[in-house]
Length: 333
Image: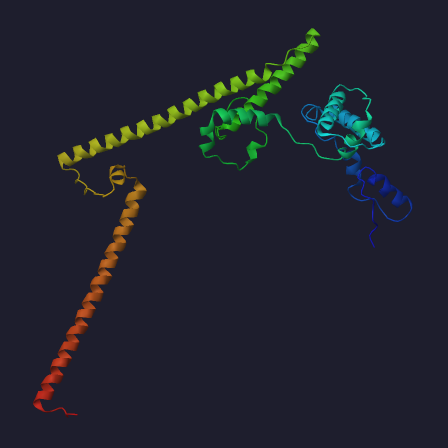
């Protein structure tokens, strides 16, 4: 019969070790070492914005913030619960978040105890810095949403280095996501340069204009790449038109000299289809349909011929019967 464990992931390794010491299990599970190396993270307070409390910071910073928030929740849970109004709950949660960011030990009031205890194990909203860039870009460029885009991730898309607007790969399609990822890359590079500058000069660097500067640069590169793409397509169309006119002129010269026969002009009731240039696949399909129609005509002619022969035989048989009856060689009924 399996042994039931308490539903507490933080105490699970100790419970497994105690069970082995008591002789209730023979060996430690296969996941025991991995769980010791990577313990479950404590849940933060609700209404805490992850980007403001440093959840996107390095591992040591995140662990420190989680420990502080867990200590606040445990300290507040020991107080007597009290019902708060909506405004007081918002003020208390904001104060707790600000104190957690400033690495201070908050003097939790009696009203904040109920809030911290009730929201200690609730999941906060997941907010990413890319969301704001996407919202601003697609609000000002709504027609980019009409462009078809493949959302299947390929092997090269896992480790794309956005050194340019194309992501360093010629196969990466140009879209609004290119602007988002390029902006994030420029932000990270600017942050690294700011950290090096602060270490060198021992002074703080103003980071307020980093995001707007990176977004403007990514947007400028996007406009240039989109213009280059459209010019390339127009050049392809012009080259195809020139090649088509050249082939028509060569065909006209051959017809004049008698080297070629003028093709049969095709007429269409549809003016759009009639004016459109025909590709090789179009003529191939036309030849297949023409061959099928010829076979159908042959089969229809054979059926009509056999039907006519049968009618002639029946007519000859009826005439013979009438001749025999008039001669009196057939018995009358």
